Image (cartoon, rainbow, N blue to C red; front, side):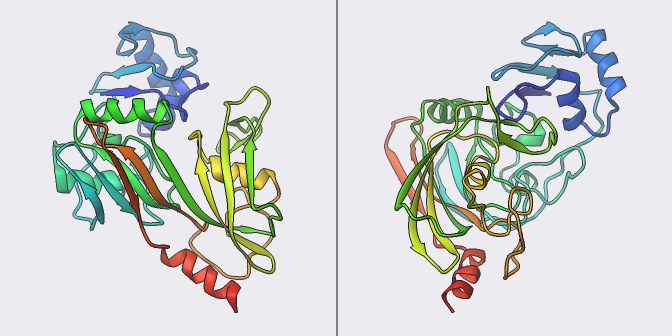
Length: 299
């Protein structure tokens, strides 16, 4: 199994990352296997304490983990598709890919049932086809690569900021400006490692926020991601005192209407079609979670 380090894995020890990824295997066993040379970084032996860098390739002997990801017949809304890739509308509540704890009911399980081996495997079975992710409770447009060549193409385009992702969100409080730019570095929360935070020395993170509609104590906004850090929108908006509605991880106070966590949707996506560069723009309607809150705020 091969994994390629991304923003989620960067700045973690090798053994810590793998213990999170393969939760059926103890950290001590992982450390032993690293020392035995059964886990390589960039095709070379490493140490358990090695700090992973973005782009590192981690090769894991298949015999180490017993977890197998099984295809599942789960309904998929495919918005756009060609021979190299597809774009799905991921529902709120669905994990993008399995974890060591949850290995069923994810988008990857559904993709494996529908497309079988016709998915990129750069990051192993856990992340077959997955080029980028959406949080479990964030709905909307997500690209899937059918082969490794396409996966690398799309990853490079994202790195070069040639893919535009726009989100709709409802936030707490009224933003007075019509448009604001949030440029604050994001990294792991040093006190709560399951969370991200604005931290000195974090990764450059840039979001453009446009107010679409104001309510008495809330706003409907559009967010354009210039960078794509973990939890970027949620962390940025919370940092300016306007957390995403019903975000229990980064929000504060009680909301007046319950939804399935944060009211956030990836609603618009523009990307160059592999491999001719033709621009494709996709847009989906506002999902039921946003509509529910919009209707409530309008009364």
